[in-house]
Amino acid sequence: MATEPSAPARSAQLFATFGLMMATAMQAADSTIVNVALPQLERDLGGGVELGAWVITSYLCATAVVAPLTGWLRRRYGARRLFASAIVAFVSASLLCSLSTGEPGIIVARILQGAGAGLILPLGQAILLDIHPKEKHGQILAIWGAALMLGPVIGPALGGIITDMASWRWVFGVNLPLGALSIWAVWRLQFRPQPNDDARIDVLGILLLMTAVGSLQLCLERGVGRSWLESPEYASEAAIALIAILGLSVRARRSDFSVLHPDVFRDVNFSLASFYNFMASGLLFVVVVFIPALGEGPLGYHATLAGLTIVPRATLMLLMILFVGRLIGRIDYRWLLASGWILMAAGLAVLASIPTTHATSSIIVGSTIQALGAGMLLTPLSTLAFSTLHRDRRTDAAGLYSLVRQLGFASGVALMTAVLRARVEVHSLFSAPIADRPGDAAAAHLANTGTLGAYRDCFLMMAIASVIIAPGILLFRIHGLGKADKKPA
Image (cartoon, rainbow, N blue to C red; front, side):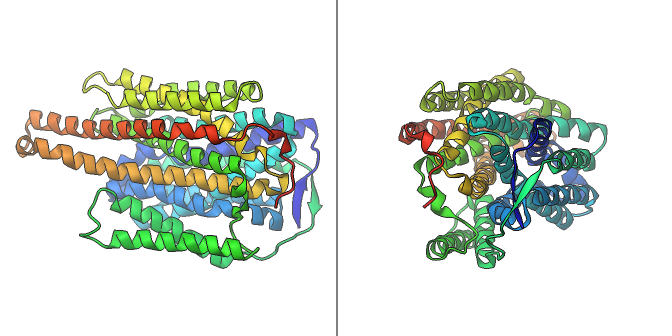
């Protein structure tokens, strides 16, 4: 039997809200907490940079595949049981990650962990919207957005401290107590049963979705910046992804029984918010991934310092998200979104001019400005996305919104990592004659300078992208937001 929440007692409602926020932060943190531990992880497991990329992207891709199933699973098993099962799966996979002894083991464990995480995020968001009245949704989504961003931005700092004090294996162990507390908080809610309206599952749709996401990821991870003429494998992966996406579209259009419910994209606000969610997530997450790598790489920071460089942005972004939540309904959404994209581009422009020496201040200033911009974007986008959707579509829409976010994370990291690799090769051409002299300090300095230049190029490209897409915010339909309870088509 599926479930819907009844009106909870005030104490249970507040505790459940806390538990859902904690689960959101925990799930989001595991996408980045391992970043600064990657060099040690790669050494212990005998892998290189490619292993580190797969440790990150395998988690994100698994999350993206599972997220759209949340609506069906909730109707089939109920919110409370599904939430507890997702947390248990997530924590169990975390323990497997910490016990891994080789490349296949850690990648499989991260896939399983991502599968559990894919349910936590959209289900938690949907439950929050259900247990709080509609007039509080802006504030609740602001707090939820703060928790969502808290994980990725404090993850590297926490991961760096744990790695330096213990080892990379312990960065996964923190999930056990947090997961247990989250289950207890939500389990106290009282739910009333609802009839099970769909006991089947769309096996074909799941296979198509997995094929589309996996092929797209492989193509982005290995094909960008390389000649497809030399290796037609990349073009084949792109073609497979395209065919799978077309198959999903046809199945969803011709059959009511589908893993995806794209009819929510008929809502203009949801479609636009999803696009900007994809772009903002990608731009934000790439910076969170790049800054620790930049610090530990050409700048020569140790793991703790590399992680701590993004702590200021975490604090200010959370404050911005909470502040913007109080402005929802008082200021035109488009003013908030315009200001957010301006700050996003400005912060990336500062990062694109990081100096060779004394770079810490530029990193902190640039990443913090970018984070403030993201803080102005996330809550308005989430509020607009669900503002004109009926509550019957919330969980399905939340799954798709989460899918878009995770695809933004994974695609952004894969794309910009490939671009970074290509730019490093370009910069290395100019330093090749000197770099051929082993043990030469000037050669090492020039190599680091070339790598730093490649990072600058990537930040500049992202700044330009932010400016190009900003005018599209004028297409949002701000009038008529009170029609959110209209029945879905």
